[in-house]
Length: 104
Image 1 (cartoon, rainbow, N blue to C red):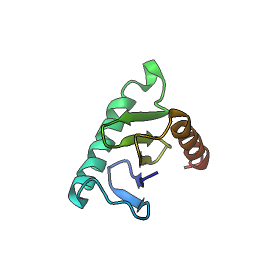
Image 2 (cartoon, rainbow, N blue to C red):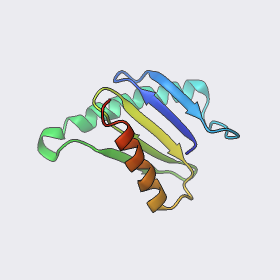
Image 3 (cartoon, one colour):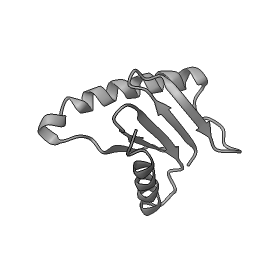
Image 4 (cartoon, helix red, strand yellow):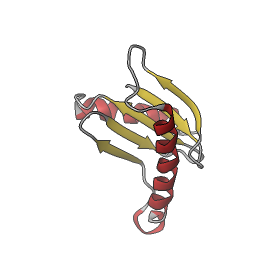
């Protein structure tokens, strides 16, 4: 993993950590905007909860980074990782985070 943030439902970063020896691909201001936008995206996904069921997680593959969003009840967990990781490794990380955050 490269970066992990716990984001409240309004998009504010509650806690964040960057892996040692890694640099952010975004400025602080960009990260804050990104987290605000992720809260909006969560609200848009929740619109379809009744008909499609709740979103368990969202997985986005970009050229330079993989982004994962997990949705415990009162927060959003945002994780970035290297896109070169295997899908099995990514799924393993998602599963571990879901177990750790199941009570949040």
